[in-house]
Structures are given as structure tokens and as C-alpha cells.
Image (tube, rainbow, N blue to C red; front, side, top):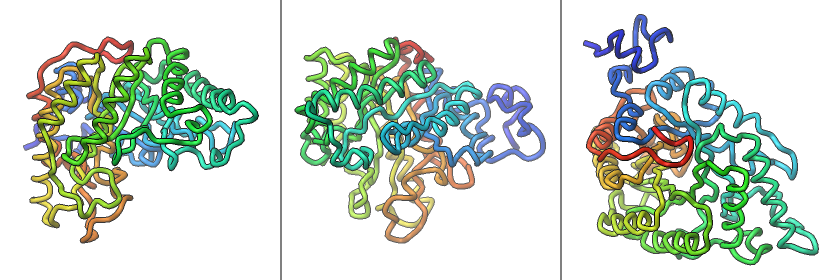
Length: 388
């Protein structure tokens, strides 16, 4: 028997939506126990990334409305999307996503003002001429991008990934780009970006976001991020939080097929989080999924392993009361970026999210809910706009 009642429909925000009548989708079985409600009960938010292609999937949008309290545009706020050519600004795709968030009472995160990686900057920056004074030219370009973007969206976005993935995941060293070559060093670029963002957004949470993980081979990446965060504090850079991407399992590498699914080092991960929070940083899990590429084909076995690993990661990470949000990078298997990455060796669809491609809840969904229920309560974050 369905657990849906008039009261649970109202609590989940579905009464009057058309879903209260006749048949209900499989995810409706969870009723008022939405992931956002479970997170809010402990003082943080739950949400997901969404791209504009998802705006045409009405059932998926209903799932987001029912389960989420926070939304982040998947690619539509990145520099190449906003400026396909120098000065050719286009905010329309991001506006559609932020309008959906506002209409449905979802807080919005921004991702990202600067992806400091040579592969992901706009192609028009390749060989860009910054003029006779390259430092001033690069600063002017970056400041204009940050000013235009932040002023356009203003308080509609409560938390920004100001800089994304500036630390090399293999060496732990800072990545060089055309911007750092012009301005003198990667640190100069990053510090400039955070100061520029703070000048426009005095009350917004500003985040450094990266994919250092808890796997044993991630030690150089973790160490490099920790050194960067230490320099931010030493130099008075206005960074509020560390964004933990949390692409666990096979991770986010193209060569995922040969990677061990579970290579966790819980002791090292706990120490890393202790060191980060000791410096006064808040934490966010910004892009959670569990990449199942190395697992066997059997769906039941795969889902069980994905859920177990997801639960272990969340239990440990949420034990830190500084975590103020958990976002998946796609809520259902039909809307995960990982389907577009290197395929599984057997060619089967990946199952890295809480819901399958029919929007049915999977064991990972239950694992997330269980971890949220077990998480210690926390005070709402102090940054304006973030409190639960």
C-alpha cells in the first residue's frame, strides 16, 4: 500500500500538482521523508545539479521539487557558457535554471566563476593578447567576468564556487593557465578572483571547490589543496568554505575501468577534514555520485556496493558539523554526466545516483537518507542566505 496521504502530499509540496490523483511515481513512496527534509532536520541542505536539458523532463523536475532544497546549474554558469566569444554575454540558459529554482523555493548555488584548468577555460583565451601590461590586462578581463556575472545574478545565488580545480590531482602542485602566466602565478589569479567576488558579493558564501578524495592515491591532491587553503588564510583571502566534489567509487577519471572501486583511506580523510575545519572553513559536498564502472554487471550487487560506499563516505564526512550542504551531481541515472564519460567495459548504463532512469529510488537513496538521520545536528551556517 502506498504511504502517501493528504498530509504527506502537502508536506512534500505535491498536493494540487496533479500527482495527488490517480497513479503516483515510484519515488512518491518516500512521502514526507524527502532528502531535503531529513537534511534540514540536521541543519543543512540537500540538492542537485540541473542542466537546461532537464527542464524538458517534467517527471524529473517533480522529483527535484519533492526531494531538494537547493539547485546548482550544471554547466550554464561557467565562463565558456556565459561568454562563447569575448564580450558576447548570454545569461539566458542560466536564467532559466535560476527561475526554476526561485519559482519552486529552491536556494541556488553558483558553479563556477573561474575553472582554473587550461582544458576548461574558453578556447578564445588560447593565445589571448593581454596587451603591453599582461598583469593589468588579465586582471581587467577576470574582474569584468566576475563583476558582470555576480551583478547579473546578485542575491539569487547564495553560495558561489569562485574557483574550481586549481590543484593538479596527480602532483598536488598548482595548475598553470594563460591567466597565471600573465598575472605571475596561480595564487595571484585565485586570490584576485576571491577578492573580486567579495567586492561585489559581501554576504555570499565563497567556496574553493575541488575533487580531492578519500582514496589512498589522493594524498598528493589532498596535500596540495590543504597547502592552498593555508595560504588563503595566511594572506587574508575571503574564502568561506571548501567544496568537496565527492565523485567517489571510480571517481571522475576517463580511465575509470581499471580503478579500484573502494580504495578509501578513512584515517587520512578524517585528518584532512580536521585540518581544513581547524582553519575555520565550512564544508560542502558539492557534486556527490558513486561511479560504478569497475563493478560487476549484476544490478542488485552493483546497487548494494554503491549504497554501502556512499553511506560510509557520508557517515564520515557528515560527522563534521561544518558541512552545510550536500548536493548530488544529478539526481537520477538518466541525468548524470557519468553516462557521457568513458563507458563501462560491458557497455551497460551506469547507476551512480539515488534514482534510476525510471526515477525509482535505489539503495543509494536509502543510504543517503540513513546517513542524514544519523548525522549530528549542526547550527545553521552563518553566511547570509545559507541557513536551513
